[in-house]
Image (cartoon, rainbow, N blue to C red; front, side, top):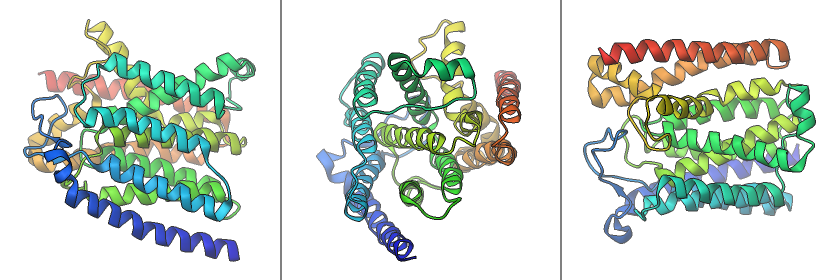
Length: 353
């Protein structure tokens, strides 16, 4: 009981600290190098704002999370090396782009791969179990395990960056994912790992206050890389700590993030485009084209985020009911692929016409 009181007090204080960090960053970010962090590119595929908006959400996020790690160490006497290294390194890679330091997408990807592999091998980070027997046996090989974990991180981090184009779209999606992860880890009462997830939910809500429905700040690449790496770690650790849950359920949780990247990669290759360069043919952008006809572009921006996340939630909640059943989870996962393709192709034809 005493520990729960301490943890509740810690999270309450952290909530206030995080809010004021976002408030201060939002107010003073325009003074950083004469507004170098402002997003003033209105011509890029995912530009839906009409006035310059600061990409300082990532700065507020990383400051808040590092403060959280310090408090966590003071309470539990534990250093969360996996979170400390991966999240700060991914933030730095994205921050270079936010500072308008030109790095090609391919070089950024290579830099990400190098940093992730170092962290995966030396922290270390591993996935202990999946619901595919032959794959589980392959994970006992260190090299294969590292490459498999690397792919998981790459898909989720780049997926987070990919869908971060509308007010609240990524943030609400991550709140849903982390809320379900927190529920799973709180089954036996509040514990150290559930505190980590709740701390991240606090950061997400604090950012959402300044980004939804109208955006005062953006996450920037630094913020989307940071949050993508956080949720990837959360899911991997939850999967390892809860072997009674099907690993396919955790794939379903991350479905929108990773499958958007996976599908876009092959779609662009088929269309003879560079798979690592942005375009305006992603699912969330096709939905926006239809929504903006009804509500206009300004309202359509945040309504689009609500529609997509409500749709996502409608597919996730039934899966959660059967999360401990590997067979149903497996069928539900592959059904989602079919459903996604049907919806995408339908929207593609409608917007094309």
